[in-house]
Length: 108
Image (cartoon, rainbow, N blue to C red):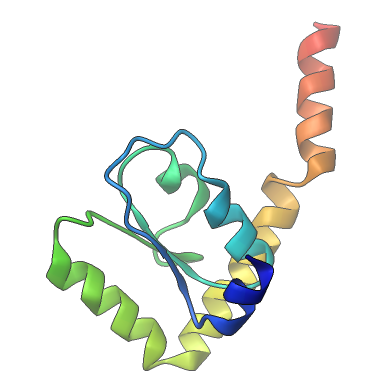
């Protein structure tokens, strides 16, 4: 998957399924790619709409297509969102952060 992410200008996850925590979003963001994801499941907890990408109802095909086109036609925006996504992953979803959170729970 890292090769596919590297080749992509953006990554889409238009799932209707209520994924609790779709790792594809984290992987793409960690590699500096903006994500256009679903409003369903846990994706909105990962992807910050308008900051690291977009969260859109995938049943609204026009809005989803518009979000894709906005990133494909504005590489500066895509780069900015990709950078913000990488920073978000490092700050909020790193292995160290997750380990610290688990340790805090166990020590309570």
